[in-house]
Amino acid sequence: MSAFLEIRNLCVTLKGGAPILRNVSLSVSAGQVHGLVGESGAGKSMIGKAVLGTLPRALAVTRGEIWLDGVNLQTLRPAERRRRIGASAALIPQDPLTALNPARRIGPQITRRLVDILGWSRADAEARALELLAEVQIPDPARVMRSYPHELSGGMRQRILIAAAFAAEPKLIIADEPTTALDVTVQKQILRLIADMQARHGTALLFVTHDLGVVSKVCDTLSVLYAGKVVEEAQMRRFFMHPIHPYSAALLAATPSYKDPDGSLTPVPQSVIDQVEREVTDHDRRVGI
Amino acid sequence: MRDARGDVKRPIGLRLWLSGGWLILLVLAALLAPWIAPQDPLAQDLFPSRLPPFWEAGAEPGYWLGSDSLGRDVLSRIIHGARLALIVALVAGTLTCLIGTALGLIAGFYRGWPDRIISRFVDIWMAFPPVLFAILLIAVLGTGLTSIIIAIVVIDWTRFARVIRAEAMTQGAMDYVASAQVAGRKRMGTMLTEILPNVLPTIIALLTLEMGIAVIVEAILSFVNLSISTDSPTWGGMISEGRTSVHQAWWVLVFPLITLFLTVLSFSQLGEGLKDRFDPVLR
Image (cartoon, rainbow over all chains, first blue to last red; front, side):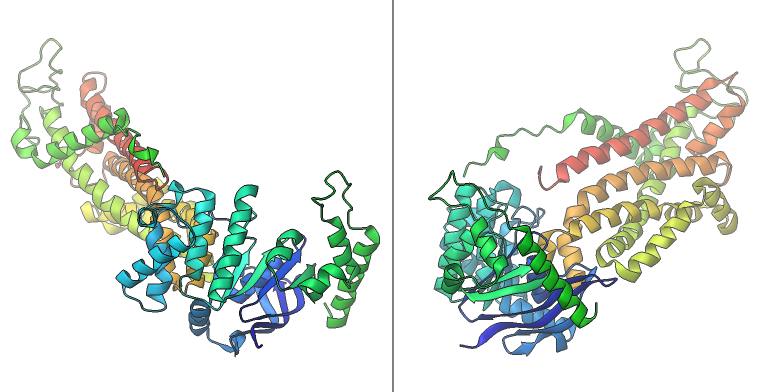
């Protein structure tokens, strides 16, 4: 199976030199779900943003390659890169409240990719959008198409964003903590919905999260990130049975358990943090930062 | 899904009624000035000079708000003055809005060097005292309606540029802009279709505010005799003339002043009211 998205030695740096991503390499095969876990600030979201070309303007890719569908994005001109990303990748964003334009109706926000990139007619795109809204279990899709975002609940908006992401049948979807901003009860539904949609459409999915429980439910492979460095890349099953890196093991041990709700939480031990910090420093010294 | 917005009554509200009503009255007065003004605003007649308004002893019918020291009817001059005030408000306000908004959007959304250039210009501009700047400009351009409009645009575009830049920056950081970019939108298209509709309420509020300010600037320029030629009636010119005789004939000063005050207030209140109605979340 060939990798649809392959990131090789990606370095992203804050203008001024502070490293954000350190030699990140990972690959997502067609139709596979790859989880990206790490603490807040580990750089999980930045990987997704680097792939989609939406890095904040203070950050820049300084080294490495991003291969999307056999093409090195770094070698393309901006317009061509944008077109290529738009045609084959999509984003399910973190916060459904800011991810829909409040001044525009839902309909055009789903259909724009179809119309703009694939050149569909408006009528075809609308028919497809209705179909998709039904697929993500939104009642009365025709009415929702005419609504403004603020008329809908957070869960509804996240469903709409999922529909919009799948609209143009992208080969890769990057889900950036898609359940973080939602209610716990809704989280589960949305998670199942994303997993179902992914399986049905055979899309490759890069799933960014800090929740190992979520990863265990939806992912095939995963990368653990610490301070912008991949600490461990593993198959799902192997990872949960035998995590190799002590940091991964400590993360797993820190996950609260349903079976033992009163058991005390185990924080990541200082010795492990010291070790990963040392590895990061070593890495920086090796590449000369 | 139940939609409660249909049940919410949205009365136009006293604020919109009053401000809109006053401005409509003013527009009608300006349009119909030659027919409704009781006297010729330029006719001088020393016999009925400094007549008091109608409720005071010694008032003459036909001079409802009294007359000035040259015997010109105050009400007629206010009505004719509304023409110039409204032309300046509409034309100068709109031009300022267009230029300032365009520059503000570009600076706030594109950032980078366009932002640096535009923002530095704004900083430099703001260091000039605006009224002196206007007087200086008129001195260079010469008096006349066009010069006044140019002066107002040149002075006030920064007001729009600053506020719209800040708004565009906030909106530009939102996820929906990133989504539009991922979907292959060009930056220009994103700016016009995603950002602009979201800053529209602010633009409307600023525009009406700017119209009020344009009226004030015109009045200030008339006050220092740099507006249109001295014989066409302007509110600022009337205030300036009334100032010299305020102890003998207060009405020459006070009535144009009240008109000016109400007009500027109405513009800003209209803007606030319209802003609420245009807000996408409240719409």
